[in-house]
Structures are given as C-alpha cells and as structure tokens.
Amino acid sequence: MTAPRTYHVITFGCQMNKADSERMAGILDEMGMQATEDPNSADVVLYNTCTIRDNAEQKVYSYLGRQAKRKQSQPDLTLIVAGCVAQQEGEQLLRRVPELDLVMGPQHANRLGDLLEQVFAGQQVVATEEIAIVEDITKPRRDSDVTAWVNVIYGCNERCTYCVVPGVRGVEQSRTPEAIRAEIEGLAQQGFKEITLLGQNIDAYGRDLPGSTADGRHQHTLTDLLYFIHDVPGIERIRFATSHPRYFTERLIRACAELPKVCEHFHIPFQSGDNEVLKAMARGYTEEKYRRIIAKIRELMPDASISADAIVGFPGETEEQFQNTLKLVEDLEFDLINTAAYSPRPGTPAAVWENQVSEAEKSDRLQRLNRLVEVQAMGRSQRYQGRIEEVLVEGANLKDPRQVMGRTRGNRLTFFAGDIAQLKGKTVPVQITEVRAFSLTGVALTPTLAAV
Ligand code: SAH
Ligand code: SF4
Ligand code: F3S
Picture 1 (cartoon, protein in one colour):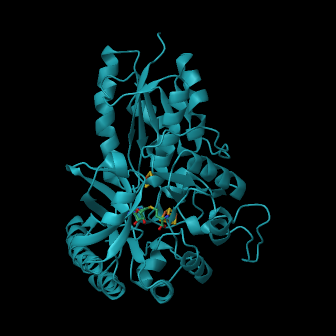
Picture 2 (cartoon, protein in one colour):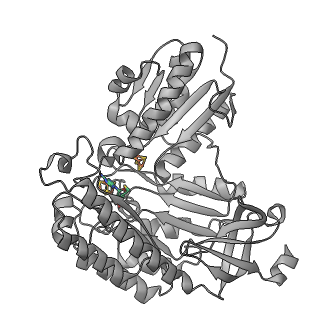
Picture 3 (cartoon, helix red, strand yellow):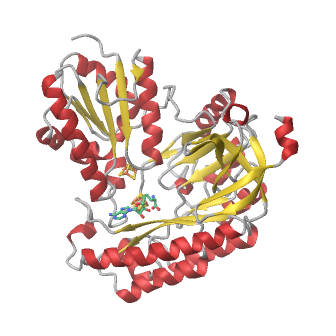
C-alpha cells in the first residue's frame, strides 16, 4: 500500500468536536499528509461525529454509506469514524460498516497518529476505552487565524436524564492552568486575537485538580483561571462556553465585569422553565435559581448578551409546563436560544420512560418557542441600532466579498464594507446601521480605517 497523501475531515456537533477536529487535522499534517477540500478524492477520510440527537447520528450513517461504497473500488482508502458516535457504538459500528479502518472515541483524539500507524500496519482498530486524556502536544490545524478554541475541561460529571454526553465524553478532566496558559501564549505568538475556553460545563473547571478542596471552596475555579490567563499579551478577547447554572457564581460575573478582555456574553442553558421538568431532567437547579443568575448578570453587566439552550417535549412535559418555558423566555429576554425537540437517546434514562410526548406535539412546541426566540432576538438587536461597537474582523462576508465579517463583544455577527486583506484580525469601531435578529450591518468609523 502506498502512503496516503491527502486527507479530508468532516465535523459534526459541538465546539468540542470542532476543537478535536482541528487537533486531529494537525496530527495528519504532521504525518506529512495534505488537507483536501474534496472528500471523494482524499486518501484518508475522517468523520468526527455527534450523537446528541438522533438526526445528528443518522446524518453520519448516510455520509458513511457513500464512502464505504467508494472503498469497495478503492481499497487503499482509509476510513475513520471519530467522536461521539464512535464512542457510543464502538465495535457495533464495524459490524454495521465493515469497511471502516478506525473507530475512535473523543478521548483518543490526541492519539490519532499512533492509531493510524496500527491501521497502516494492516489492522482494523477500535479505540473507545476510557483513558486519561494525554496532554496536548499536537499542533492543531486551526480553521481561523484570528479566533481559537482552547479546551480547559473535558467530559461531564452530570447525569441529565436525556443526555449522551457523560457516556461518550467520560468524567471531567481539567487541564492545569499552566498548560492552558502556555497554549494561549503560543496562540498569541501566532497572531490569534481571541480565545474561547471550552468545556461541556466550563464553570465546573478545576474541581478534579489536585489542590481543589472538597468543601466547595476551590483553589482552581474558572474565575481563578480567568485571572490567571488574562494578561497574556496579544490576546484581546476572552470568551468561555458552556456555563451550567449549577456552578455559575456571582464571583464569576464580577470577574467578567472587572476583566477588560472578557467579553460581555454568557451562554447558560436552562433547558426548561418548569421545576418539575427540571427535576425529571436531573438538572440540579430550579427556575428561580436560573432567574437569580440572570438578574445578577443584568445588575452587574446590564448590556451583556445572554444565550441559552432549551429542550421542548421532554417526557411528561404538559402544555402548562411548556408554558412555563415560554414564560421564562418572555421574562428574561435572550439574545439567542438554541432550541431542540427532545430526542430519545440510547442508554439514557428518559428514553425508556413511558410518558413520551408525541412528535406532532414536540414540533408544534418547537415552532412556538422558535417564533418567540426570533421576535425576542430582534428586540435585543434593536439596542445596537446607531451604536458604535467594537468588531473583531474574522474573515470576508462569504455572500458579499466587498464586506468583511466579525463579531461584537456581545457575540453578534456583524458585517461592514472593507478589505479583508487589510482588516483581518483588527478590532474596528463600527457604527451599526442595520439590525436583524441574529446579525448586524454597520460602517467602519473612518479614523480607524485610516490608521490600519
Ligand atoms: N453541557 C451543556 C450542554 C451540552 S449538550 C449543558 O448542560 O448545558 C448541548 C445541548 O444539546 C443541550 O444544552 C441540550 O439543550 C441539547 N440536548 C442534549 N441532549 C438532548 C436530547 N436528548 N434531545 C434534545 N436535545 C438535547
Ligand atoms: Fe449533558 Fe447535562 Fe452534561 Fe450538559 S450537563 S453535557 S446536558 S449531562
Ligand atoms: Fe455532539 Fe458529542 Fe458534542 S454528542 S454535541 S459532539 S459532545
């Protein structure tokens, strides 16, 4: 077999998967392979998969089917399934798609090089055992050269009754503050301007590190981490996601208000606005607690953007309980909510409960919630009209090359006329002239343009 020369990575799922894909692409680069845009000519095709909802999983199978067929006529093609479907299905995936060469769970992402060596030696490999994640010595191939993900905590110790993540991502493993800071310093040296600290429950960061105390007064918390990394020269913006209401503290909000590089945006899923549903979900907080968190943010950071995730049609959810979700949304005013109809997942408790809500009811509730979300996002966008916002330019507007695209500190996608060659990576004051529910358009203020 000749050595594979080109590879193609296809990523499904959340930011964690995107970050893993960038690291795996980095490993393939280091092995001397080249990225190609065309999956159908690549020698190595890697699917980094997601199983959070059934439709995410099914998408993978339909893609895989096509590549498996190609392999029948091109036996040298190397097919890899990584990520959460790989972890969930393991060996079974080989039975379903025998053409696969490598099935590897998310905890094995950094081991891709070793695993591929075994494949090239002629083995079919399944790597899904739970392991301590190897500290990252790979050089990720980042999709952006302005903003970068930085993993700070892997895994999840919660047991929400609908969710596959603890099963596929394993227990919480925090990286040390020193390792995190070293990665951020490296990013700054390469010219990155913005970092997003990543974790399934980012605010649970540090609970597993030595030196943490069992009494809830941890030395290593997300708040401490923000202070620890804040002064890395060259980094202009710091974001973090996703926050879990259980671990969210007033101290964290105060740190965000105080630290100039930390952007005014919080992503804190509430899932449901009804206490009984929250209890059945095993979320570990009440809607009152959630409201108190948001009230505290509004008090200390009145202009902060707030986004969330919500699930409709959880087993047993009545119309009245769904109304409580609508009510929570109406009262709190979100900038964005990722909404989803409940999807029963294999191996999760709620999937086998008998009180499932019908598909028709779920999709009706989803539509009603989505309407409210859009109206509300539009309302929240209005506050930007005429204002001057700092926009960090990330790239060209793909739909209009005369425009560039970036984000406000509050995470609103913003477009304005300009030359990407000049503006990439620059923070530009932009006067907002047009607002839409989920994006803005503006004009760059001239003094800065002259300065760049
Ligand atoms: N750790 C984060 C969320 C991670 S999963 C948290 O707890 O907030 C991302 C989102 O997927 C969740 O917030 C939830 O809204 C959604 N989700 C997870 N499992 C789901 C399921 N079985 N059906 C529908 N949506 C689901
Ligand atoms: Fe899933 Fe709950 Fe963990 Fe979030 S906290 S990843 S929803 S189990
Ligand atoms: Fe999906 Fe795995 Fe993320 S299931 S949402 S890719 S943790």
